[in-house]
Length: 388
Image 1 (tube, helix red, strand yellow):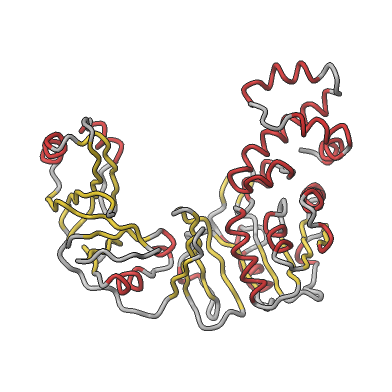
Image 2 (tube, one colour):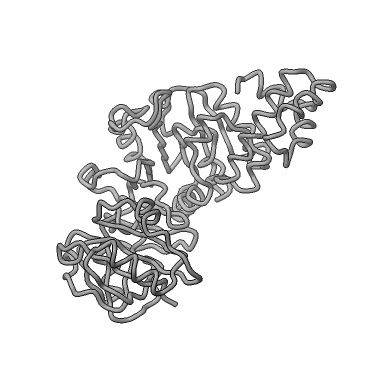
């Protein structure tokens, strides 16, 4: 999208066309474009169809709001999922911050969440189109009153009257994902320094950030949504916690208590698969303590326990068989039990789940889950099903 595209979409004719295209099937683009060009100018039709496709993609992150928002392809890809942005905004609001400086604001996903949390926001980006999109999104959702948009290099913008500072450095270029933190835009070192001035301050980083890269005094929070780890955030001015795993949509939070690694135990009746955020935050020991469990192997994040206990931090399975890994034996066992729906999970195994499923060709009315892993260092198959 270009600034000219946004201008024509915001004009009355563009609004009329976007409204008419809601629910449009992208497979019909050619026929629809041909029909619409009889009434509307070709540039408007092209811009509206492109924006409609982006809005449909944006629904996965922004829900129903996406139908009224404006996106660029890069901005949509980089934007924060609304549920995650809402969680982070609640933390800023709970801190007592009256306003937040949103540096590298992108299309405004985080700014919108902060505004909805009742905070004043100054959104900063150096790209004029991005700044126009942020303003358009806030106005479209009725949130523009407390928003100031500054089109400038973030390095040239001071904290002003804002208590909080949030930085979301770009981790992608036209060539793809950037893995060197100092190649972020702006570099991670600059982002950390800027956020450390906030009360609180936060930097969005990739969930794969090494623990040794977390600055002293910062809290590292890993966030999952629906079981998928979405991001990590480094918080400043939030004393008392060094590591945290937050699971959405429940909002359950597990914090580090400095526990030693759990003991290794023989596989018991129940196996717990910790949420990815718990694993990334190195909080498996904390989850195991709540379950009175141990590990099946010192290097594998599967927790085993004798009792079934409710926990938001792991998914429980009842284990029926513990066997050395042997493909033919597994195939015979599944055939005997008429298992046609097979879920394959692995941790610490080189076996490809899809290849295993093709070779076994499960058939029958029953379902089962097989874990391909190591138990006390030995390749093992654990057969079971989700615990009731």
